[in-house]
Length: 243
Image 1 (cartoon, rainbow, N blue to C red):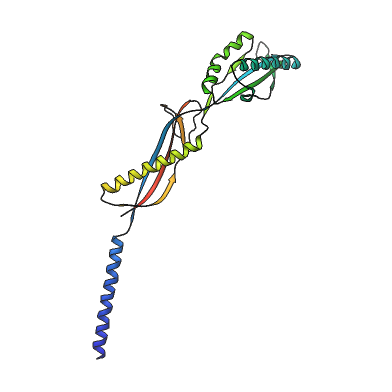
Image 2 (cartoon, rainbow, N blue to C red):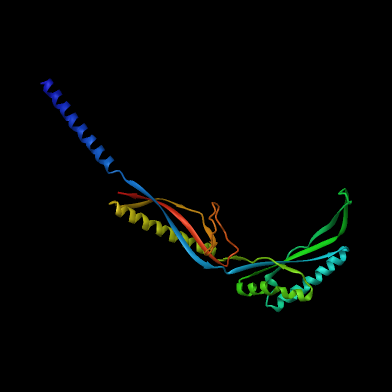
């Protein structure tokens, strides 16, 4: 009797182990996989803020006279900009920079004799910040008119910015995410799988380059300020579950 009971218990244990092992194999075969895709969000836009700088200077042996001459130039420049419709709130005159000039003296056979003071150079920059991009662009091209007044104003290249950059970033993230989702869906359908839940999402670097330019993207994020017409782009890496 005991032998028969032991045989029955042993048989039941084998059946139970087989069932458990069978479920383990089934669950392993049904393990959820993943798919990772990268989506791109991109758009063109026009800058709505311009920053333009110009430098003017005076050279004189007398420091006091150099300051007086530079002040006259500043007043003439200010009057010129006002005549062009530029208000005081758009203008920033930076601090005056003072440099001493020296001439290096040598003998006929090249022996150094020392340096000789030749005067002072006083320089100042004026900066215009405006959302009226076209007006400031026009002024930057016409500023040579000041030469007729004897003012040496050296124009620098304008810089262009966009004041709604944060809104643009949100829009680009949305576009990149949707682009990645569509890619993941296409890949899963073509492979006979079903796209499941989103597991992870990783945002790439936000890039701003000039339109139709050959600028390289930067690991830290390119930020073009030389072009009025720009292209913004960002990538999103998404990982989905697939069944």
